[in-house]
Amino acid sequence: MRERRLRLADRLRIERAVQRVDWVLDGRVPIAKRRQVRNELRSNLVEAAQEVGAEKAIQQLGDLRALAVSYLELYRGRFDFQAGAIAAVITYAALQVLGLALILAFHAGVAAGGAHSGTYSLQFWSGFGPFSISVSADGRQFSMLLLSPAHLVLMAVAFAIGSSYRTVFARRSH
Amino acid sequence: MAENGAHDSQMLKGVLSLALLRLLAERESYGYELVTQLHELGLTEIQDGSVYPALGRLERDGHVTSRLVASSSGAARKYYRPSRSGYAELAHIEVAWQSLVGALKPILARPVPAKPKEALP
Image (tube, rainbow over all chains, first blue to last red; front, side, top):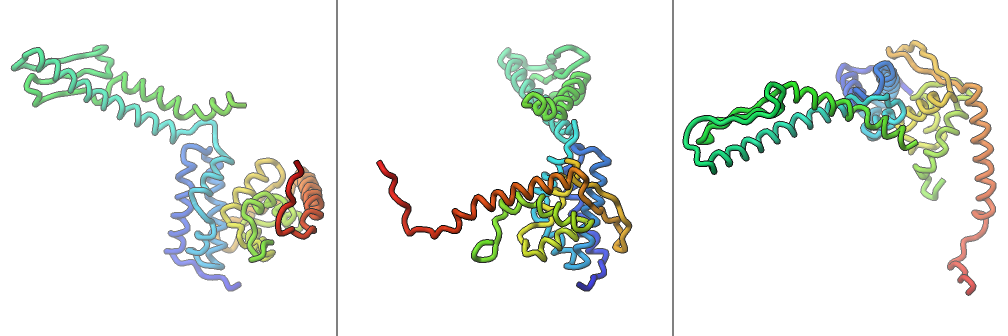
């Protein structure tokens, strides 16, 4: 079959497909293995694109997500840093939502107590967090901690559990 | 092969290792070349995306070894060849395959009746 010359657009298209597979492996597969997967996939795609064109070459791969999952199952490392990062972000979001709920509840309490002016505050573990709130009696102003040592500790714990639970779970199920 | 020439994709997945090891036993090869060879054999339903991880699996299990060879297309090609364990695995799968085909042959050779026989009470 006659070889086609690849244009820049073809190479970019191939690179995009490689990156889409690589993104799923990011933080889950050891870096050296990921590089090998990227290089081999790129090399095969270039070969295929020279014969059938970049678009068809990528199409022939099938579902890129399924391909990435196959590689993931094959080369998964001990830690899943992507899952750890997601767990940490969810923990942070949950703390902030809880903080907002506390503000609403605290303000309701302040209003029920008949306060008309001034600012009222509530603190758990002063200086450590994660909740240190203050709210004005009229409810127009409030403040809460965006980051504290407790936030960091809880996020670190969530990250550790999120990134390793699969390894621990797999070991226990064997 | 089915009547319309299509193969069952699940069945193909099961014999992909056999086909890959057999082709590699004939000639050292790389991912896309193997895909092309499989397609030339009529196994056109096999997608490139199932061959590449299958090669990775064979390598992880120690059935093939690989080496990088520079190519004119730019990126180096990863060539695979069966290892000693790969040849043993190939022999094992070939025997299993032949035995399966042998066991099914007499059943498939019989004509399919219009209606199954009623079970005796």
